[in-house]
Image (cartoon, rainbow, N blue to C red):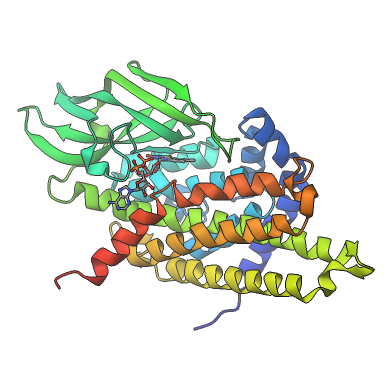
Length: 388
Ligand SMILES: Cc1cc2nc3c(=O)[nH]c(=O)nc-3n(C[C@H](O)[C@H](O)[C@H](O)COP(=O)(O)OP(=O)(O)OC[C@H]3O[C@@H](n4cnc5c(N)ncnc54)[C@H](O)[C@@H]3O)c2cc1C
């Protein structure tokens, strides 16, 4: 077991650090205030090779291991959570599912769009009536004349309306009307019968739209089906999604580290009662507790990424238990760390003049999106008591 970064990883972190500090941090407040997608950051990431860095070489990617993507995401999130999330969604999420279970043509085209166009694929699972209980989803994709005809509504889909590639979870119905279970199907933005509905007025991470995807008789070629397995389709898609959970945890960690760094700096400068704040033991101990929390999150996330194993198509995907532990722990721990960091600033921390309040709103998401903390605990407990 080696906890040292390789020279290549060190260079990657330095690149992400430089971009984060010099390019992404100065405009991070703008995306939040204006509810604006950072297109210009996407192009910077693309040119720096940070989009799709896990994509296999045969599709033009750098085929970097998951841990490298985690390092880049964590570093960028210290400066801009929204931009870090784009790195997640172009290295994990829908991409993980397509790379593990898609056809060669689907893999090639999804990779091309990310690497050449900066497309950030969206993953459409949640519906108004199916969140944690995803198996209750009602969207259907019915086979007809070499096509699938999709009906249904998704909501809270990250990048809805921005993402050209949309991996939509649906109940697959074959030409004879038989239910084939839950599968995933690729739908391009702009396909007739696919419209964008309500865009949420979200609390945080406001630079990426969270939108409703509405399918009303939307026809896509049958070749767009990613997973069709009446027995295991849902399980496969969820396996693919484990990488996304590790990526989301890395954003939470990065936001917490960024807030903590700001607090350390402030405690060294601010004075009260004739001393610098850093010299009050009560505050020192709080900061030391946060330091422990950050290291513990880091170990769990790095372990989940390094423990990734080849599942389907030789794609390295994290184990469900590792991913759920990392996400459940980092979701609430990162929130605590950002909240304690904000506290160090007194009233200034509560102002929009500083990034702390934005970071607190952003980091709250990771206890909900990508499967709530309770859903992660359920999955961990299910493994714990399996067969007992
Ligand atoms: C910012 C953001 C981005 C998102 N992006 C996407 C996306 O890109 N794609 C996508 O498909 N979805 C996305 N989502 C949706 C997200 O995955 C769901 O919100 C989440 O899975 C919870 O579903 P729900 O909101 O319907 O809550 P519900 O499932 O209704 O849950 C409500 C509460 O009950 C708890 N609960 C439910 N069932 C149980 C149980 N069995 N045991 C214990 N507690 C339980 C939950 O933990 C939660 O606290 C996003 C959400 C947010 C906030």
